[in-house]
Length: 364
Image 1: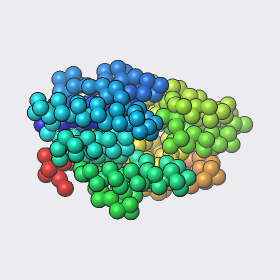
Image 2: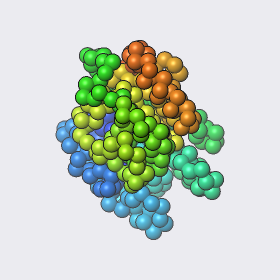
Image 3: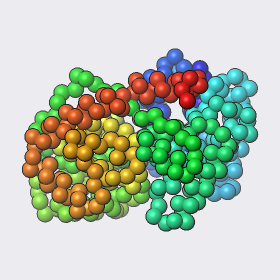
Image 4: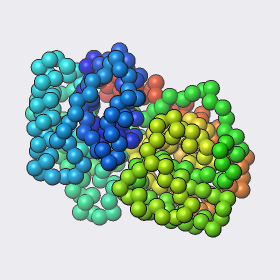
């Protein structure tokens, strides 16, 4: 099959998702039409982690993050032109749209180009981002309008799927998955490379990830030398991470990211919403206890009291961190369950098989 992926932004978890599909569906040919946000991550740095034999990259030059009638119209026209050329060469068997901007413009472009085998994966419901009702209504309107153009909405988690169904949008779910290395050694009580109780998160530093909450939690521990907080990533909300016990690493190669997650005693997420975080899944596969903000996407990963906990406030997170700190043996037991859960519910082989069946219309 020839599968066209339309991606904006081509960075972070979305790039990981696309890479995992390309890597695991090696018998298919993948064409990736992508935008670029150089301030987040250069596409050249992402492309080098893809296979070389079954993928082609095409720059979507007009695509950008902000909503603008003029710029988005230009992006739509460009995307239509790209799809028209690919269709003329018989290079379009299925189109997979990744994230909300690609989902809206991509479904409209496919409708105009008479392409019917279309899949849209939101990777995080955009109407959950803001506490401002007017903004939420705006995003909900465009999600409903986008669904009228056709295509299948395929969410990354059941809780995200349920959010779309509440809007009256027909949706299904396929869990994100990662490769689970069964040969990885169990986590030690004291991870290598640190004598402190290390709490790690890995994400873009943006509003969705709520760095202000992460900072508030870390600030409560600033006078206790035995705790340290690491944010692996970069982003425009970096200025919100001011507590002296927070280290911001910036973007790192995948191998170094995994090393830092593996060095953690605890993985934390303060996100306002998720699709299904690849970084959290990596933490599970590395046998880490996870402490996640109770939100769509996160609540699908935590089995309360077995591999971690959900929290709804700064105070709840602080209590749980202290509980984990005082019970290192509990962290080990929870970590083992994390790894088992990842292998059984978030395995990339199962994920890619379901998407392959969806591309050929065998899974509905």
